[in-house]
Image (cartoon, rainbow, N blue to C red; front, side, top):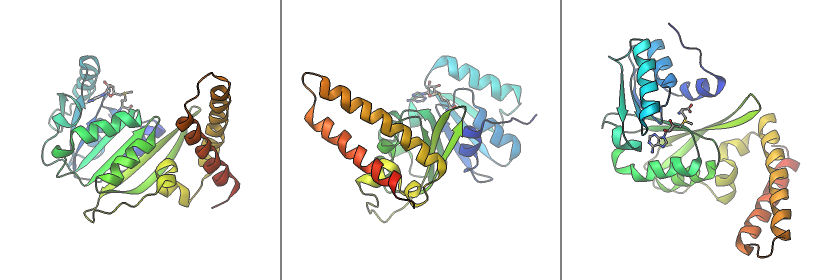
Length: 232
Ligand SMILES: C[S@@+](CC[C@H](N)C(=O)[O-])C[C@H]1O[C@@H](n2cnc3c(N)ncnc32)[C@H](O)[C@@H]1O
């Protein structure tokens, strides 16, 4: 029985090549590993979960689709659950700082990982920063609009050259996004600009606004206005 994924999950799944062993960390429903393994019987996966409830739900999806020979559902924190032959990693549907902390805590366990696909709900800059300081290069960035939400999917490939490739502005927006500013990109940053201007207004009215944070937000407003006013 085929699984029809949402646009967000389908975009994430599309980056897993055929025949690889991958891990989906924070798998919850295990829809991504199940959909991929149904389409490609040569692939195999680890579905990792830190909480019992989502773990049970992941196991139920795997059982319902009779995929126990391809997918191992494991209870554990972050990358503790992965094997040393996993080549592709998915971490989706969490905040960017949590994703970055999972990667940082587990970085000794990912020697075999060639590609990491992440979908941070917020704070994708934290993950880009982690990629930039840990020898991963962003090769793809996709924005997906679904049910009023705009999601960012980031794909990073291992690069042994040990170079920093992103400046502060690229870490903020995404280097691939900046190269080709789509309609969804403009929409997202138009929205963010409104939020930031509101926050700055509120900070200015408060008794003790943090000057460093205020300056940072002002810098972000300038960057966003710059990008919205210049076509790529
Ligand atoms: C909102 S769900 C996202 C599920 C799915 N990845 C998606 O994108 O639809 C986030 C899941 O990550 C799990 N999670 C959070 N921190 C984790 C960690 N350190 N290790 C493993 N799973 C974690 C949560 O228990 C939850 O089930």
